[in-house]
Image (cartoon, rainbow, N blue to C red):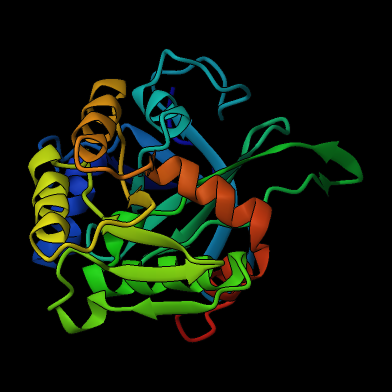
Length: 278
């Protein structure tokens, strides 16, 4: 079918295409110049935010009415991957939310700085309660120092520390990004913000530094920005255990995000509202 009245053509970018657009800062050059998708703007609740309906020329209905695995961008959204949207191949937006109304209501936000998640509340459209899917925090958008600062802000609030120091900001930390002590129990936090998965050697090199300097903590906690497989978790724990570290914990990016939301939601709120990081 053709494009409905008042709708505009759009192109959807997968995570790889979006990454190139962010890094190269060049106009998007789609492999297929024909726009199979289109978007109808319903309202503009903010300067950089648009809400509207998304449709395709190969669908029987005008706009999406349900989330279906038939279309790859829904699968990627469920997998917490980024989906970009551009109307002119120069300015790029990102799908941040999908409201389960009829048709589905898409919220897209113009990409300026690293995007942060919104809170997971239920809202209403036209008086009807609808649920909304929440896009994850993209830790990969932050530099090493920004990620460490976020971790430090979190760790600082979790305990009534006797000593808590952010050593990683200098770059000469002897394998200790954050070092804390409480009731004569020592804690070492290592930050590993890697997009896909944490490199095992990066963690073992940090442990080797601790051993060399004879700085063996009671607790060794690795906080990652990406995914962590079960085998990597086990390997890290086994490696640390042989040097007398009593307990080792490894958090994936998703686990860290959920801890942030549960323990210190104010930190997430500050990022969303654009207050100076963190």
